Every structure is written in C-alpha cells, then in structure tokens.
Length: 102
Image 1 (tube, rainbow, N blue to C red):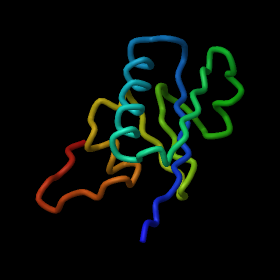
Image 2: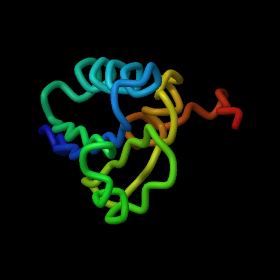
Image 3: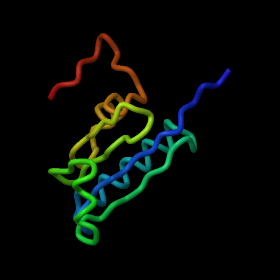
C-alpha cells in the first residue's frame, strides 16, 4: 500500500545568480530521484515579485520552503548538501550513525 505524499515546494531566488541556479538544479535533481513525480516546485524570483517574500517570511536567498506536507520547513542556501536537504524536507530520516554537522 503506497502512502506517498505530494510535496509542494517553493524556491525563492533573486535573479539568475550562480547560487540561485545551483539551488534550482539541486532541488530538481533531488525531487526527480526521491519523490518520483509526487512534487511541485514553484520558483519565485524576488527581483520580479519582492512582495512575495513577506508571506513565507523570507530573509535570505535562495530559500526553499516546503509548504506541504505540513509543518512548513525552510532550507537556506544553494542546496548542495543532498543529505541535509532530504532530512530537512523530511524525505529521508537521519541514520542514527550519521550526523549532520551544522
């Protein structure tokens, strides 16, 4: 029995900076590998729509927001640490023997 959840993600960027491009490439790659079509990614460019930052309380960019499933979660940066992103989004649980260093 499959109980797959549909993930609703928002990626806040500010133009086509190297970090923004890397973040988008990384989250697309992780979602394709781990969520198998059970996701949507909305990209919000704050240079075009700066007022949208207030709704999700965005203070740094790029920021990835998991809107659903709740609770809301945020990850800031270019998303290059796959393990941290997957654990942060609650796609994968942290192995007891592995520790994520902050």
